[in-house]
Amino acid sequence: MSHYRSNVRDIEFMLFDVLERGEVLGRAPFADIDRETAGDVLRQVAELAEGPIGSSLLESDRTPPVFDPATGTVTMPQSFQDSYQAWVDNEWWRLEIPAELGGTPAPPSLTWALSELVLGANPPVKMYAAGFTFANVLYRLGTPEQQGLAQLMIDKKWGATMVLTEPDAGSDVGAGRTRAVENADGTWNLTGVKRFITSGTAPFYDNVIHFVLARPAGAGPGTKGLSLFIVPQHHLDLQTGEQGPANGVQVANIEHKMGIKASTTCELRFGEDADNPAVGWLLGGVHDGIAQMFRIIEYARMLVGTKAIATLSTGYLNALDYAKERVQGADLTRMTDKTAPRVTITHHPDVRRSLMLQKSYAEGLRALMLYTASFQDTVFAAQQASGDEAVAADSEAGMAARVNDLLLPLVKGCGSERAWVLLGTESLQTFGGSGFLQDYPLEQYVRDAKIDSLYEGTTAIQGQDFFFRKILRDKGAALGYVAQEVLATVTAQTDDGLGDVRGAVARALGEIQAMVEFLTGRATAAQQDPQQLYAVGLGTTRFLLAAGDLVIGWLLLRQAEVAQRLLATGERPGDTAYLQGKVAAARFFAGEVLPRLGADRRTITAPDTALMDLPEEAF
Image 1 (cartoon, helix red, strand yellow):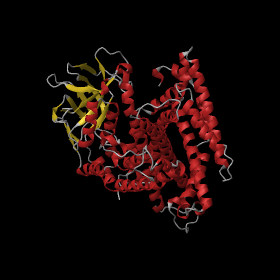
Image 2 (cartoon, helix red, strand yellow):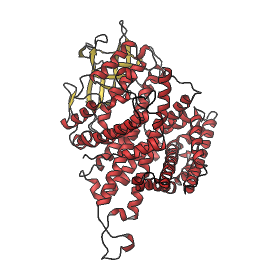
Image 3 (cartoon, helix red, strand yellow):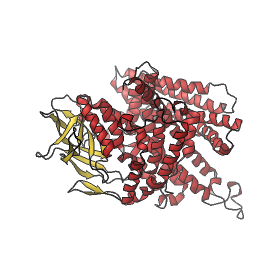
Image 4 (cartoon, helix red, strand yellow):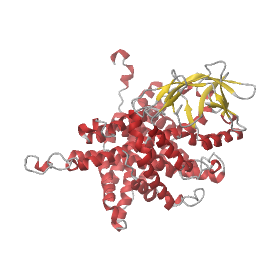
């Protein structure tokens, strides 16, 4: 067994007992996958993750890729290449691509559950395999010729990158200066420098298809002037699929990083050799770059959040295993008795507090991720039924799309922030001094997880996106939908002993509503007084995390309701302890975490905007 600890039972509980995803399986558009098949796939991928996929994580951190500047290529441990090949060869990735490209469509809720297993075991494996997902985007948005390239990407198992960030632009994508000039034959020549490009080179595929944001000559400033181009590492004949010489895109460097070292993070230079320009095609033949790239960005944000959540889960389970074995000290009630027997540290109150905090967040964040994915199920099914990418705004699928958009910043922002903090302050701490050593995987988990709060939009960006775009611009429609779902749960007249938890979630909902009212009021007032936006900006990150805690607390309550029902009926006697843990997690979170939302509300609604007037020299 590798470092990785999966939790298939918890995935299945949320998917099938709480979200009732079994109802969408075995029928169009998922007719080839029924409930039994889905369970089998989860278990097989878990076995793969705990075995060959996870086995190389530690070595690939100790022996990171080595870059050869003369060739623009890297070498990396054979063990990692074997892990990657194990994922490719087993072909479970085909569940994420359309039948037209040789896939077997599965509900996103199931495919994200599978992604959790791979991302928890060895995140770079899933990241290098992005070519399969990018091929799907190319197929949906591309011209007929480009759809043929999508098939080549699948058949030849090529890599792919999303290329946005520039050295002087960073998160301000609209400030990008990479240029594109059209050629007489309809192709485009690109010039510019991009950085922090994931999977720009690897030894296990012989071509990489770069999806590059660039500004066509004559286009206006900002994001609206950007278009999306497809630039292969090696020239291609789109008619025959024949691969030619190297294109004018150069891997100039790979970054030396704090963590997730097996993932090559590259600097790419386009068109620096006048004799070998970087030639590509305009995606879909239309100048719609940001909207097109956001198809990839949204997937990447979901992936980053899922990666963080998966790492927290295996971190907690590793800590739990250690705590059950580590004998130290006497029981607190007998601490002055020198003859008292030594006990495992799971007997100590603060260790139990720590473990339950890890458990409630790990399982609650997983629930958030799968709940979000369930709305993607609805959108996907509607698109398949209509044969159209667009869904009517006033339809069930239209609302599902809006709720998915609302929840994505929570998955990415809350998932990454909570995982990173808990891994370092609780999971590693459970090991004591041993957690600081490389004898256990926690120190690597902490380093590998930090990046999740930084890339694909920092937490501050997620907070601003959550409020300004997903709530204010949406006029609170998706937020209102989720609030009504929460309200229905907390007002249910059910005699299951969870009334106190419902009360705590109801109070938390009220705190969030008060935060929304305050932030919305200041945003409205900013139309006459722009400085009112400072009060909003000072609060959006705190608001994001508080909203995430509300949804987690609510989903833990839903899980506890199902667990109480199963305990009462006695229909799963083998799961009694697990179900008791579900009830305990909901109670713990309601008492330990949700009361903090009151302090969050008081802080947000009384911002110290004088901070914005402070001279820089005072910091």
